Amino acid sequence: MPLEPWGPGTASCIWRFNSLYWQALSHWEQFTGREYERALPGGTSDARNTAAVRELILELFKIWDDLDARGALPAELYVVELGVGNGGQARAWLDEFVALSRAHHRDYYRRLHYLMGDYSPHVLGRARQAVAHHGEHVTSLVVDATRPSESLGFLRGKAFLVYISNVYDNLPTDEVAHLGGRTYLNQVRAYLPRAAAGALAERVGASPAEVPAVLGKLLKLGPELASEAMPVQLPTPEDAVEFWRQAWAELRLAERYVPIGGLDLYQVAPDVDGEMLRPLLESGEDIRMHVNNGTVASFVDTLRLLHPYGKLISHDLFVTDVGAYRTAFKGPGKYEGSVVCWLNGPLLAHIGRRMGYDVQYAPFAHRTGTNIVTMTAQARD
Image (cartoon, rainbow, N blue to C red; front, side, top):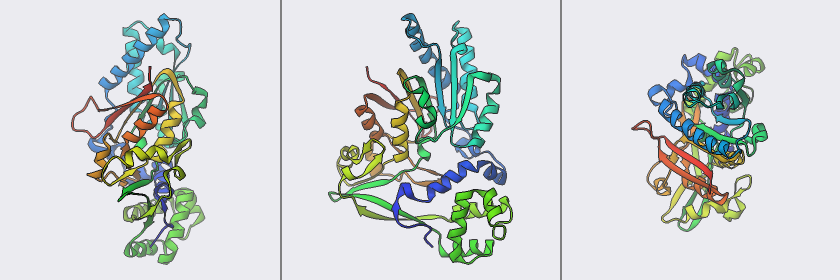
């Protein structure tokens, strides 16, 4: 049973499910009885690592010391974290920052402004509690990761560090393919198997044909408002969450290839056209790869926030060799209640170079046996 018409991956309702997960995360966690980070391998994020935090702060101190010696250090020092999780990273970073400032006899903490940005108000609220002891040094904002400057535009050219962990892999993406000398867009259509649609219909006292409409209203309104708008089908928010979880568990994607008339006609993100894909698509044998449209938009927008000596650091699931797309499946996949895709590292590096930034990838240095890769982007000298 189709839930939508054919279209590019970024337009699929799977990303509405993804948005609902973060907007209504408290309901999901109440139902499952665990915080979402417990669903990560090992029950924690690779980025929450004291050694990595210390190394990062000492690098900042070196930059600031040099600027201070030249009388060029701003009075206010801005650090941004996007995707704050439960606040563990912010707490570890700020606590270590205070300790190192004292150990190195620096007054940088007095001048520090740590900005936490996240799409989920529930996540932000929990993170604020974790760093409450740092008081006025911390500001939290609801931020759309694909357009960070909408909330953080006042930082343009001022951020010495933008830190992003496990956010990019959760942003909308198309897929493109180069097969037999032609370029295609991979269109998708979400659907429910007929048996699953029948079981969902029985649960809400509706016909199978009515299931897409009920689900669509739930995705638009969230569990609380949906239960008020549809008291017969979804009497309580808990009923709405159970319906949502069952639908998500059964959802599938059909796919088809549609020729692209020309890469110049395809828009990757604002200010980034499809020609950026050509070197990768025409790099050798047939290939199908992610465009990571949401990530590209976020990446380009975030670079504009950086101070000339600033740095963007992201810990995430990066493909670092385009050839990996020829040998392994890289998503989209269902992860807990959200969508996860690996990230086209060579594409981000290519775009970064065009903007005057050096983009490097390295295995996460402080834990073995992890898929997490660290991306670093900073202006070229």
